[in-house]
Length: 562
Image (tube, rainbow, N blue to C red; front, side, top):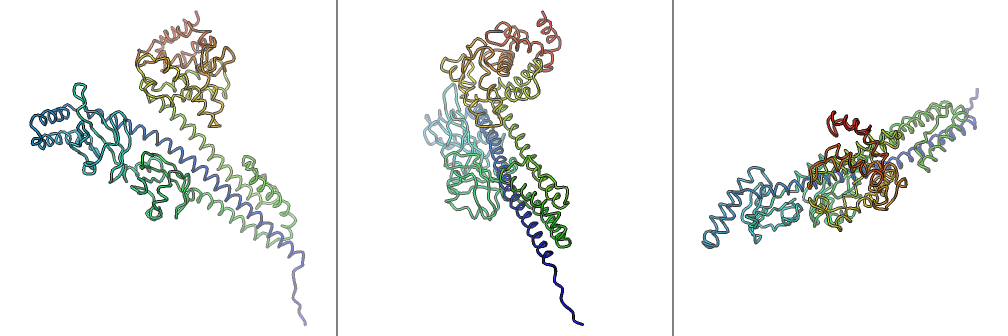
């Protein structure tokens, strides 16, 4: 009996081949789309995150510098230290250089006593000629030959010595309005500082001076790859490729040749998301290939068209980047629908991450507004109060939820342009000159320019730019009149004026709530919108804990009614 080998029908082979190739193509397209899009999205997210960290830490560094300056100024008022320095200058002129050693020793003992109260890295005292008389602190030995990098009138800054970089503040030591020396207080920018910043930001930290690496939280192998030429070039880069990964890079501090950088690994951030996507696609691939091998003909008839549709959808999503439109299920193939569901789930996660980024970004803007208020203790909380008052007025006028949200953030940001006004003008205790007032009047335009660079904040530009316009046309910056001024800007104008009148300033005490309201009514129709003033008066009882006690608020309501 002769046996013949049976070969599969040509159609089955062709169907199996087409099915396998189609499934492979779809999975490859999905893998490519996920890999490219996912990495770009992660790169953008890492870049935004490290920039937010830089802004927050920059504000913190400014605060640290100011605290260091205040601390140095306070220590410079030590009466025993002043007495020792005065005695040194007086007796040195009388007794000559022979007595200098004992006089300097006395100064050193007094300086050690002052240093014992705060345990600084460096506390140094110089005479009026800049000569170091005594140094105390944990790193006193590194400061003896250092020249002061910051003068008393500069506040806080950074200085480089052979052993490293220091944040430094200098304060005049004066006796009867005569400067007799300079006290220097310095904190090392070293490994300990790098770890503190790294813990706060959740990023890697690199501290360099010129082409030298002073401190870092990067892996040792990565540091070895940093050549002097690469180190010098870091200041002009946004990303840098190192042996272990590609890093997003932002400069936190840069003064002279001293620089502090924040770094975050783009590869490390992208790896978990890509790994999860590959694992999901791998599971789907195994199922798809097994199904193709068992029932190629059925798959050819029931999967070919759905696969083609899903492939087209993925390619279109990759091309248009319209990730808000989910890939629709086919209803005829569980495997293909699983692929679509996995892709939609991943895209939903990406959209949520973008939304979280936006929330964090708006939080950063709010923190910036609070930091602006903190420049002057008399205006602390001003932006928050103006926002609360504006919302109360908006509710009284019955604005819709969308308008209230625009009003809330716009009022919070209304004075953001004052970030460009110098402290000498902004915190001047007396009356401003004409030139100084003209400088102050520039802040709405500055604020508007800041917001125009941020597309998400476009709805708030009118509030920031026009909140000093007046119904009678005598406002600024454009001299708009009446209803040509947007309603939300008119609301913030009234809320801003009311809070300014009822808050204490360096040049006057706070006016009473009733007094402030009477002033608004007196100028209603000329400086302030009368309808908005009426709404403020009606909403005052709702501002619990902000203005006046319950009795005073009831009196105000009666005053409005009459």
